[in-house]
Length: 199
Image 1 (spheres, rainbow, N blue to C red):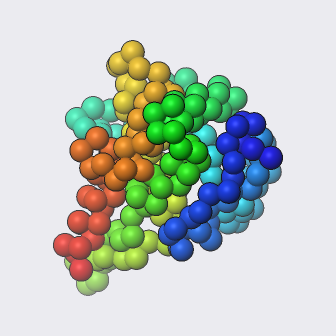
Image 2 (image 1 turned 135 degrees about the vertical axis):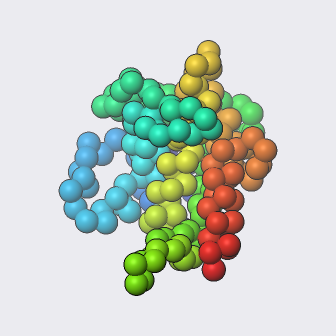
Image 3 (image 1 turned 60 degrees about the vertical axis):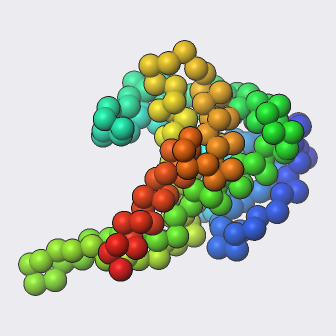
């Protein structure tokens, strides 16, 4: 079985911690209809492309990012089939630009944007300060997918670009570990820099 009837699932995951949480379960259309929704840690079994689709169905940031609040006004919330079509178009664009399997490009992008360290707030004796902590594999994947999808939404905000074009550009930039043009890689670097300072 191939993704969208076009792309093979035989992709090597190089990052060993992400290997245990990235599911490449063969599906033609990445839509399991919420089968794992209310079961603890069952999202590990959800196909990684479907998890990307789920992250794209959001109402923007709700906070300032790059000096402005990004709002999609619910245009994608609940419209899973519409988002799946956009992801399919994005994968076609990725294949046109890179001549590689888009699923492999997506996995490289996730590996490059998943942070290894983060900071958490600790309070002792009425004084709160931040300390550096290692990030679990499930959170690494969640943060990587969130930043990739948020970057795609930000690239389409107030511009004539389609979501498919923005998503394709962000995934390609992230897979190349391009800090200049990838928002997700910048965010990962920023998180790790803050964690390093809080060690």
